[in-house]
Length: 131
Image (cartoon, rainbow, N blue to C red; front, side, top):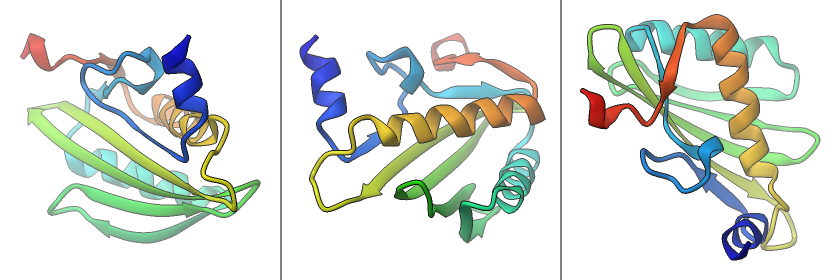
């Protein structure tokens, strides 16, 4: 209960391997890093409320801004662990007058992950220990 309240009362969220919240665990896709980066770029270009800020395929980093309904800055890191197994980590910070986003940053991560599941083959979350 306390962790749920803490999640709501902050203005950023990020994924990690062993996150206590299942929605914020690192998602894995059956694709190479370039395919993931291409899918992310396509996704951002298709959405009117997303604005591409930068992309570095060599480093596996991608950044974009969510412009509505609330502003948020998103950094995505794609890491290929072995051929056709790529982990994607998100870091989302919201811009608001208050120091809280009431779970909006978590919702952005969830929405982008679900969109990617439609474009790439999803294989699970937090799979690092199974490598």
